Image (cartoon, rainbow, N blue to C red; front, side, top):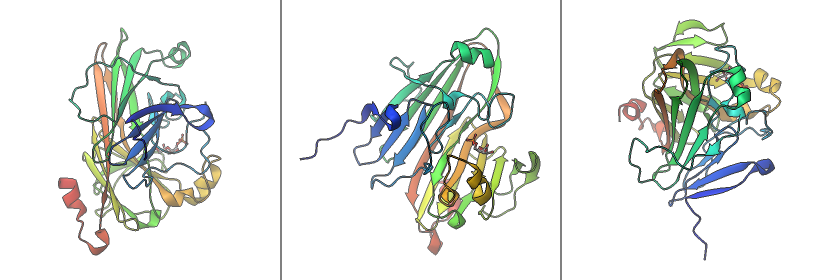
Length: 311
Ligand code: TA6
Protein backbone atom coordinates (compact mmCIF):
# COMPACT_ATOMS: atom_id res chain seq x y z
CA UNK A 1 0.00 0.00 0.00
CA UNK A 2 1.61 3.32 -1.12
CA UNK A 3 2.06 5.88 1.64
CA UNK A 4 0.54 9.26 0.72
CA UNK A 5 3.31 11.81 0.41
CA UNK A 6 2.90 15.18 2.20
CA UNK A 7 1.87 18.27 0.17
CA UNK A 8 5.09 20.00 1.25
CA UNK A 9 8.38 18.14 1.77
CA UNK A 10 11.75 19.77 2.54
CA UNK A 11 14.60 17.54 1.39
CA UNK A 12 17.97 17.47 -0.37
CA UNK A 13 18.41 17.81 -4.10
CA UNK A 14 21.32 17.80 -6.55
CA UNK A 15 24.69 18.22 -4.78
CA UNK A 16 22.82 18.19 -1.46
CA UNK A 17 21.24 21.59 -2.12
CA UNK A 18 18.07 22.19 -0.08
CA UNK A 19 14.86 21.85 -2.04
CA UNK A 20 11.14 21.80 -1.38
CA UNK A 21 8.80 19.37 -3.15
CA UNK A 22 5.15 20.40 -3.51
CA UNK A 23 2.55 17.72 -4.28
CA UNK A 24 -1.07 18.03 -5.19
CA UNK A 25 -3.46 15.17 -4.37
CA UNK A 26 -4.26 14.49 -8.02
CA UNK A 27 -0.62 13.88 -8.83
CA UNK A 28 0.89 17.13 -10.06
CA UNK A 29 4.09 18.29 -8.38
CA UNK A 30 6.71 21.03 -8.32
CA UNK A 31 10.25 21.37 -6.98
CA UNK A 32 11.89 24.56 -5.69
CA UNK A 33 15.53 25.03 -4.72
CA UNK A 34 16.37 27.47 -1.92
CA UNK A 35 19.36 28.33 -4.10
CA UNK A 36 17.92 31.12 -6.20
CA UNK A 37 14.35 30.60 -4.94
CA UNK A 38 14.36 28.60 -8.15
CA UNK A 39 11.52 26.36 -9.39
CA UNK A 40 13.25 23.57 -11.33
CA UNK A 41 10.37 21.18 -11.96
CA UNK A 42 6.61 21.31 -12.59
CA UNK A 43 4.85 18.07 -13.49
CA UNK A 44 1.25 17.44 -14.44
CA UNK A 45 -0.88 14.72 -12.89
CA UNK A 46 0.54 12.21 -15.42
CA UNK A 47 4.02 12.97 -14.11
CA UNK A 48 5.03 14.70 -17.37
CA UNK A 49 7.61 17.48 -16.92
CA UNK A 50 6.32 20.85 -18.14
CA UNK A 51 9.43 22.95 -17.53
CA UNK A 52 12.69 22.68 -19.44
CA UNK A 53 15.87 21.94 -17.49
CA UNK A 54 19.11 21.94 -19.49
CA UNK A 55 20.73 18.54 -20.05
CA UNK A 56 23.89 20.27 -18.85
CA UNK A 57 22.44 22.27 -15.94
CA UNK A 58 24.99 22.34 -13.17
CA UNK A 59 23.60 23.10 -9.75
CA UNK A 60 26.87 24.74 -8.66
CA UNK A 61 26.67 28.17 -6.96
CA UNK A 62 27.43 30.89 -7.86
CA UNK A 63 26.27 29.84 -11.33
CA UNK A 64 22.53 30.16 -11.94
CA UNK A 65 20.61 26.95 -12.67
CA UNK A 66 19.92 26.69 -16.44
CA UNK A 67 16.23 26.02 -16.80
CA UNK A 68 13.07 26.03 -14.70
CA UNK A 69 12.10 29.53 -13.51
CA UNK A 70 15.07 31.72 -12.54
CA UNK A 71 14.12 35.00 -10.84
CA UNK A 72 15.69 38.06 -12.44
CA UNK A 73 16.01 40.77 -9.72
CA UNK A 74 16.89 43.61 -9.09
CA UNK A 75 17.86 43.85 -12.80
CA UNK A 76 16.59 42.16 -15.96
CA UNK A 77 19.23 41.28 -18.54
CA UNK A 78 21.85 43.93 -19.06
CA UNK A 79 19.38 46.75 -18.30
CA UNK A 80 21.67 48.30 -15.67
CA UNK A 81 25.20 48.02 -14.27
CA UNK A 82 24.73 44.83 -12.25
CA UNK A 83 25.58 41.35 -13.54
CA UNK A 84 23.21 39.94 -16.17
CA UNK A 85 19.77 39.35 -14.62
CA UNK A 86 20.78 40.74 -11.20
CA UNK A 87 21.76 38.47 -8.27
CA UNK A 88 18.65 36.96 -6.64
CA UNK A 89 19.08 33.82 -8.82
CA UNK A 90 22.59 33.29 -7.42
CA UNK A 91 21.75 33.64 -3.74
CA UNK A 92 20.47 31.31 -1.06
CA UNK A 93 16.91 32.06 0.01
CA UNK A 94 15.28 30.92 3.28
CA UNK A 95 11.93 29.42 4.15
CA UNK A 96 9.71 32.19 5.47
CA UNK A 97 8.30 30.72 8.68
CA UNK A 98 6.29 33.81 9.57
CA UNK A 99 4.99 35.42 6.36
CA UNK A 100 2.59 38.37 6.63
CA UNK A 101 -1.01 37.38 5.84
CA UNK A 102 -1.46 36.59 2.17
CA UNK A 103 -3.75 38.94 0.26
CA UNK A 104 -5.99 36.11 -0.93
CA UNK A 105 -7.38 33.24 1.15
CA UNK A 106 -6.02 30.02 -0.35
CA UNK A 107 -7.50 26.50 -0.17
CA UNK A 108 -4.26 25.15 -1.53
CA UNK A 109 -2.12 23.07 0.79
CA UNK A 110 0.76 22.66 -1.59
CA UNK A 111 2.57 25.96 -1.18
CA UNK A 112 5.79 27.31 0.30
CA UNK A 113 6.85 30.79 1.35
CA UNK A 114 10.44 31.82 0.72
CA UNK A 115 12.24 35.02 1.68
CA UNK A 116 15.33 36.79 0.36
CA UNK A 117 17.04 39.71 2.11
CA UNK A 118 20.26 41.41 0.98
CA UNK A 119 23.53 40.41 2.67
CA UNK A 120 26.26 42.92 3.58
CA UNK A 121 27.96 41.91 0.32
CA UNK A 122 24.75 42.51 -1.66
CA UNK A 123 24.36 45.96 -0.11
CA UNK A 124 27.80 46.89 -1.44
CA UNK A 125 26.70 46.20 -5.03
CA UNK A 126 23.10 47.39 -4.69
CA UNK A 127 22.76 49.62 -1.64
CA UNK A 128 19.06 49.16 -0.96
CA UNK A 129 17.24 47.31 1.87
CA UNK A 130 14.20 45.23 1.04
CA UNK A 131 12.35 42.04 1.91
CA UNK A 132 11.57 39.83 -1.07
CA UNK A 133 8.86 37.28 -0.26
CA UNK A 134 8.00 34.59 -2.80
CA UNK A 135 5.05 32.21 -2.48
CA UNK A 136 5.04 29.19 -4.80
CA UNK A 137 1.71 27.39 -4.99
CA UNK A 138 0.52 24.30 -6.80
CA UNK A 139 -3.20 24.70 -7.45
CA UNK A 140 -5.87 21.98 -7.34
CA UNK A 141 -5.80 21.71 -11.15
CA UNK A 142 -2.02 21.49 -11.17
CA UNK A 143 -1.59 25.17 -12.04
CA UNK A 144 1.67 26.70 -10.85
CA UNK A 145 1.53 30.12 -9.24
CA UNK A 146 4.43 32.36 -8.18
CA UNK A 147 3.67 35.51 -6.20
CA UNK A 148 6.49 37.93 -5.40
CA UNK A 149 6.07 40.68 -2.79
CA UNK A 150 8.98 43.13 -2.56
CA UNK A 151 8.86 45.62 0.28
CA UNK A 152 11.14 48.67 0.51
CA UNK A 153 12.42 48.71 4.13
CA UNK A 154 14.98 51.41 3.29
CA UNK A 155 14.83 55.11 4.13
CA UNK A 156 15.01 56.10 0.45
CA UNK A 157 13.18 55.00 -2.73
CA UNK A 158 14.72 52.47 -5.12
CA UNK A 159 13.89 51.16 -8.60
CA UNK A 160 14.33 47.72 -10.12
CA UNK A 161 13.45 45.62 -13.16
CA UNK A 162 12.22 42.04 -12.88
CA UNK A 163 11.38 38.81 -14.70
CA UNK A 164 10.17 35.28 -14.08
CA UNK A 165 12.58 33.77 -16.65
CA UNK A 166 10.38 30.75 -17.38
CA UNK A 167 11.83 27.92 -19.51
CA UNK A 168 8.88 25.96 -20.95
CA UNK A 169 9.43 22.41 -22.17
CA UNK A 170 8.21 21.95 -25.75
CA UNK A 171 8.21 18.96 -28.08
CA UNK A 172 9.75 20.71 -31.07
CA UNK A 173 10.32 24.46 -31.22
CA UNK A 174 9.43 24.57 -34.93
CA UNK A 175 5.98 23.25 -34.01
CA UNK A 176 5.25 25.94 -31.43
CA UNK A 177 3.27 29.17 -31.83
CA UNK A 178 2.70 31.98 -29.36
CA UNK A 179 -0.62 33.83 -29.31
CA UNK A 180 -1.35 37.15 -27.62
CA UNK A 181 1.71 39.18 -28.71
CA UNK A 182 0.61 39.98 -32.23
CA UNK A 183 0.92 43.63 -33.41
CA UNK A 184 2.71 44.65 -30.18
CA UNK A 185 5.87 46.75 -30.02
CA UNK A 186 9.05 45.00 -28.88
CA UNK A 187 12.70 45.74 -28.20
CA UNK A 188 14.93 43.40 -30.21
CA UNK A 189 17.88 42.31 -28.08
CA UNK A 190 19.57 41.03 -31.24
CA UNK A 191 19.43 44.52 -32.77
CA UNK A 192 20.75 46.71 -29.97
CA UNK A 193 17.33 46.82 -28.32
CA UNK A 194 15.88 48.71 -31.29
CA UNK A 195 12.07 49.07 -31.19
CA UNK A 196 9.90 47.29 -33.77
CA UNK A 197 6.23 46.30 -34.15
CA UNK A 198 5.32 42.61 -34.37
CA UNK A 199 3.45 41.28 -37.40
CA UNK A 200 -0.21 40.35 -37.20
CA UNK A 201 0.01 36.60 -36.98
CA UNK A 202 0.94 34.24 -34.20
CA UNK A 203 4.66 34.02 -33.50
CA UNK A 204 6.50 30.95 -34.78
CA UNK A 205 10.19 30.03 -34.57
CA UNK A 206 12.82 29.33 -37.20
CA UNK A 207 15.88 31.19 -35.83
CA UNK A 208 17.33 32.83 -32.68
CA UNK A 209 14.83 35.15 -31.00
CA UNK A 210 15.39 37.52 -28.09
CA UNK A 211 12.56 40.05 -27.88
CA UNK A 212 11.06 42.12 -25.08
CA UNK A 213 7.35 42.68 -25.87
CA UNK A 214 5.99 45.82 -24.32
CA UNK A 215 2.67 46.36 -22.52
CA UNK A 216 1.30 42.94 -23.38
CA UNK A 217 -2.10 41.44 -22.48
CA UNK A 218 -2.18 39.66 -19.12
CA UNK A 219 -2.70 36.31 -20.87
CA UNK A 220 -0.44 34.64 -23.43
CA UNK A 221 -0.95 31.22 -25.02
CA UNK A 222 1.96 28.96 -26.04
CA UNK A 223 0.68 26.18 -28.27
CA UNK A 224 2.68 22.99 -28.72
CA UNK A 225 1.03 21.25 -31.66
CA UNK A 226 3.07 18.09 -31.38
CA UNK A 227 2.19 17.59 -27.71
CA UNK A 228 -1.40 18.84 -28.22
CA UNK A 229 -0.73 21.05 -25.25
CA UNK A 230 -1.31 24.74 -24.63
CA UNK A 231 0.45 26.63 -21.88
CA UNK A 232 -1.62 29.56 -20.65
CA UNK A 233 0.53 32.18 -18.96
CA UNK A 234 -1.32 34.75 -16.82
CA UNK A 235 0.49 37.63 -15.17
CA UNK A 236 -0.20 40.60 -12.89
CA UNK A 237 2.04 43.57 -12.11
CA UNK A 238 4.35 42.54 -14.98
CA UNK A 239 3.49 44.56 -18.09
CA UNK A 240 6.13 43.10 -20.43
CA UNK A 241 6.92 39.63 -21.81
CA UNK A 242 10.30 38.37 -23.03
CA UNK A 243 10.49 35.62 -25.65
CA UNK A 244 13.83 33.84 -26.02
CA UNK A 245 15.28 30.88 -27.88
CA UNK A 246 19.07 30.83 -28.43
CA UNK A 247 18.79 28.53 -31.47
CA UNK A 248 21.68 26.44 -32.78
CA UNK A 249 24.74 28.73 -32.79
CA UNK A 250 24.18 30.38 -29.38
CA UNK A 251 23.21 26.99 -27.90
CA UNK A 252 26.68 25.71 -28.80
CA UNK A 253 28.29 28.72 -27.09
CA UNK A 254 26.62 28.05 -23.72
CA UNK A 255 28.55 25.56 -21.54
CA UNK A 256 25.54 24.65 -19.42
CA UNK A 257 23.21 24.09 -22.39
CA UNK A 258 23.10 20.99 -24.64
CA UNK A 259 23.69 21.59 -28.36
CA UNK A 260 20.19 20.35 -29.25
CA UNK A 261 18.43 21.65 -26.15
CA UNK A 262 17.16 24.71 -28.06
CA UNK A 263 14.77 22.40 -29.94
CA UNK A 264 12.92 21.52 -26.74
CA UNK A 265 12.59 24.82 -24.86
CA UNK A 266 11.09 28.26 -25.18
CA UNK A 267 11.42 31.04 -22.64
CA UNK A 268 8.31 33.19 -22.23
CA UNK A 269 9.01 35.51 -19.34
CA UNK A 270 6.54 37.67 -17.43
CA UNK A 271 8.59 40.82 -16.87
CA UNK A 272 8.83 44.49 -15.95
CA UNK A 273 11.65 45.88 -18.09
CA UNK A 274 10.69 48.94 -20.11
CA UNK A 275 9.58 50.94 -17.08
CA UNK A 276 11.49 50.18 -13.87
CA UNK A 277 9.36 49.68 -10.74
CA UNK A 278 10.00 52.34 -8.12
CA UNK A 279 9.16 51.79 -4.46
CA UNK A 280 9.09 54.53 -1.85
CA UNK A 281 10.08 53.61 1.72
CA UNK A 282 7.45 51.24 3.19
CA UNK A 283 5.86 50.52 -0.17
CA UNK A 284 5.37 46.96 -1.46
CA UNK A 285 5.17 45.69 -5.05
CA UNK A 286 3.42 42.46 -6.06
CA UNK A 287 4.16 40.51 -9.23
CA UNK A 288 2.26 37.33 -10.00
CA UNK A 289 2.71 34.55 -12.56
CA UNK A 290 0.23 31.73 -13.11
CA UNK A 291 0.99 28.88 -15.48
CA UNK A 292 -1.48 26.24 -16.60
CA UNK A 293 -1.10 23.51 -19.16
CA UNK A 294 -4.27 22.49 -20.98
CA UNK A 295 -4.72 19.73 -23.53
CA UNK A 296 -5.30 21.26 -26.94
CA UNK A 297 -6.40 19.86 -30.28
CA UNK A 298 -5.32 22.88 -32.22
CA UNK A 299 -4.20 20.70 -35.06
CA UNK A 300 -7.85 20.32 -36.05
CA UNK A 301 -8.38 24.02 -35.45
CA UNK A 302 -10.80 23.21 -32.66
CA UNK A 303 -8.87 25.18 -30.07
CA UNK A 304 -9.14 28.83 -30.90
CA UNK A 305 -6.32 30.55 -28.95
CA UNK A 306 -8.33 33.76 -29.03
CA UNK A 307 -10.96 31.86 -27.02
CA UNK A 308 -8.23 30.76 -24.57
CA UNK A 309 -7.02 34.35 -24.29
CA UNK A 310 -10.54 35.74 -23.77
CA UNK A 311 -11.70 32.81 -21.51
O1 TA6 B 1 15.72 36.54 -21.27
C1 TA6 B 1 16.47 36.48 -22.42
C2 TA6 B 1 17.92 36.74 -22.08
O2 TA6 B 1 18.07 38.00 -21.52
C3 TA6 B 1 18.80 36.53 -23.32
O3 TA6 B 1 19.37 37.70 -23.75
C4 TA6 B 1 19.81 35.47 -22.89
O4 TA6 B 1 20.99 36.00 -22.51
C5 TA6 B 1 19.07 34.78 -21.76
O5 TA6 B 1 18.37 35.78 -21.10
C6 TA6 B 1 19.90 33.95 -20.82
O6 TA6 B 1 20.64 34.70 -19.96
P1 TA6 B 1 21.65 33.98 -18.94
O7 TA6 B 1 22.28 35.08 -18.16
O8 TA6 B 1 20.81 33.08 -18.07
O9 TA6 B 1 22.63 33.20 -19.78
